[in-house]
Image (cartoon, rainbow, N blue to C red; front, side, top):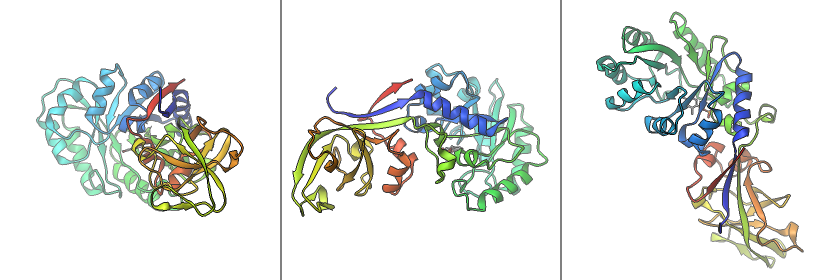
Length: 360
Ligand SMILES: *Cc1c(COP(=O)(O)O)cnc(C)c1O
C-alpha cells in the first residue's frame, strides 16, 4: 500500500451503539438505518455485524435492499421512500421488503398488483416536515384503502421529525401530538423516532419502533455532550504526513494564501483532500490529531492534500507520521462544525479513493 488515506471501521462500536439505542427505546424495537451504504460505513458489513441482534434494517430504495439480500441478509428491510415504479412490487413481495407508502400512486399500484405474498406497509404521515406522506386529513382514508386490500399484511404508522436535533424547538411536540391524534383510532404499530428523538427520549409511549441512523455510527445530531457520551465512534479517518517544511514569518500556505505564518513555523502536508471526502470548507484551525498531539488544518484543503500545523513537533522528523482527521481523538462533530456541515455529510461523502479497513 502506498498512499495512506484510510477509513478504519470498528464494527463492534456500531453493534454497541445499536444496543444502546435499543436500551434507550425499550421496549420498542429498533430499525437499524443503513441507507446510503450505512452512512458510508459499508452496508453489507454493517448488516452482517448486526444480523443476529437487529429487529429490522432500513434503506432508502430497492437497489440498496437488493444489495443486502444478495449478500445473504435475511432480516426485514424497510424501504423508507417505498417503491418508485410498479415493477418493484414483485421483488418487494418475494423478498420480505417492507415498504413505506407515502402517496396515492403507491396505494393504487398495490391495489392493482397480484403478487402472492401480502406485504407489510409503513404508511407515512406528513406531520409537519412537508417532505413525504399523507397530510393528517388524508391519512385515515389512505389507511382504510390499504386496510381493505388482501395484498397488504400489516400497516405500521410512521412519521418523521423535522427538528428533533433542536431541543429548544416546540415543533417535535407539535408533530408528535398531531400524529398521535391522527392515528388514535387506527390499529397498528407506530414509529416516529430518529436518532435525535431516541437520544433525547422524545418518544410517545405508544411507539413500537424507533429508527436510529447516525447514532449507530457514534455521532450525535444533538449538540449536548451529556447525550452523546455513551456513543462510540465507529469510523477513524487517517492520512500521513508526506512532506514537511519550515516557513518564514509572513509566508502563506496553500491555494489563495488563506493562512499566513505569524512566526517561523513548521508545517506539514498530508495525504488526504476533498477528492477523498475531507471537506474543502474546513477552516484554518479545524482539529486533527498527530502522533498523540492535537494539531490543526492550516490553509485551504486541496483536492489530494491538505496542510497541517507541525509547530508542536519543531525538533522532530515528521515524515510518515499518522494523522487522524476524525475518529477516537477528533470528534467528527467538531470537524463538521468547522466545515459548516454535519457529520452525516462527512460520513456519506467519503470517496472510493479512501480504502476501508474493518476491525472487530
Ligand atoms: C434517515 C432516516 C432516519 C434516521 O435518521 P437519523 O437522524 O440518522 O437517526 C429515520 N427515519 C427516516 C424516515 C429516515 O429517512
